[in-house]
Structures are given as structure tokens and as C-alpha cells.
Length: 203
Image (cartoon, rainbow, N blue to C red):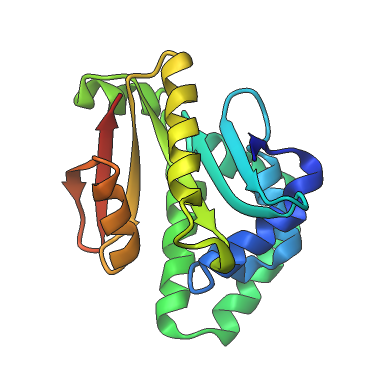
């Protein structure tokens, strides 16, 4: 069953994210802070859906947003002290690569002055009105069962009904499984950095 995410799902959502992206930055914040991160995206401006099994356990999630910087900045404002202490601990105890990732993350989200109309300006370069698929993950036990495809199909229906003409996302180049999946879903690469591919799909 696919339904809208709700606040009572937040801990399960955070645990699923941590399971799916254990080597990424956000899971290192811990379940409580990660739950609060996702809480900022549960509103009518975003498309936040989950897939549940027969026992209503969350086995997949998908989050799409018109501007991810809004939720990220709100999360930082609401949890600044706890977040600061956690980041200091990470910087002291983790390896150089993770330390650099933490600094880069906060440069992008906190330090850089992002124009309010960043999303619209970006869409002009694409010539279409797009949404960003920010997060898609499926539990280990549900991989290969079609949950990702179901979530994306429902997401695309909502995107179209909401007046958007397509959506974009980014994937690490070394994530072979994700890159193969998005190509299978008829997405095309429209930009590339040293570590990531940017995908787009017109709908």
C-alpha cells in the first residue's frame, strides 16, 4: 500500500534511511535528528509517500520537493545546538573524508547565500517546471520486489497532477544499482560533476 507519510512514521522513516544510506552524511546524525530532518518535509508543499506491507510496516519511501533548501534550513534553525554538537563530534572522531563532507555540507546549506528563487532560475535553464526527487529508499527485505517502481509511478502521477512537467535527481556515480534503476525508469543524464550524475525525466 502506498500512502502519504505522516509524523507518526518519522522514526521508521529515519531507520529506513539509515539502513539504505549508512555510509552517507545524514545517518551519522542519529535516528532522533534524522527524524526531525524528515519532519520538515511533511507538508503540502512536498510529495512525501511511503510504501507499507500488510502489517503497516514501512518498506519504502519517496520524497519529492520543489526546493530542498527550505526544509534543510528549517531543520538547521530548529535543531542548531544539537546539530552543532553532533557535527563537532563527527569532525573529531571520523576520518578525513567524512570530515570534508561535513564541511562541504554546511558550506552549501548554511554559509552560501541561496537566492529565494533558486528553484525557478534553475528550471529556466531546463526550460521546464521541475520537482526534485530528494530521497528514495527501500528496505533490504523488499529490494527486488518492485517497491521502488511502484513508488516512482505514484510519484510521477502526483507530479503531473500538481502541474510539474518533470523531475530531477542526483546519484553518486559509484552507486551502480541506483544508476541502473533510474536509466530503466527512462531518466536521462543532463548534468555531471566529479562524483555525481544529474538525471531528468519529462512527464
